[in-house]
Length: 209
Image: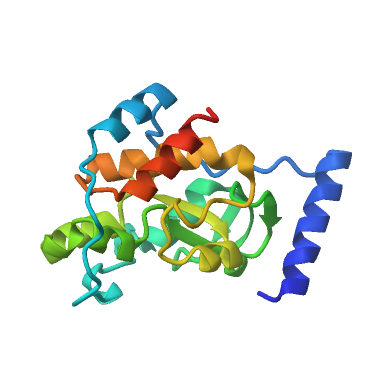
């Protein structure tokens, strides 16, 4: 997606929302904890320096796997997080609307939307997943039972890369609280560690809740 198309998408969303033509669903992964719970979970995480990237490959986190019928994880999240999503016989989204809470943009083409791993695969590798089995890494990469997967603007996801909240946060500061809650709960559920700068950034973000 070009920067021009992205700007057009944001502009159209802003105008449509202002005159009441669009009422997009907010992408909301399941089991986002309360701020108090997230703060308690953050306090319980192991703090240590990140491990190395030696041996890392995205292929060691198999995704996207089949979730139901012909739908893989990406397609299932697109259906969950979108509005009026229509799919074809192979479960590919042919139409719908997706509101990206990271930047406030709404998209009508699934190709403009990425499924973000809230805790990136490489970040998980550095904080404990390097020692997991392939089956554990596959479960993590396709985890729809917690707040680890969310549909967002593709360019925003790509800008995030494998960064932690110490160096990257969603463009919309109003979403920092929710993002921190999702990040902390994912690390807590999967027994992943945090480094000191990551923990400090998360504590600051949870302070906005």
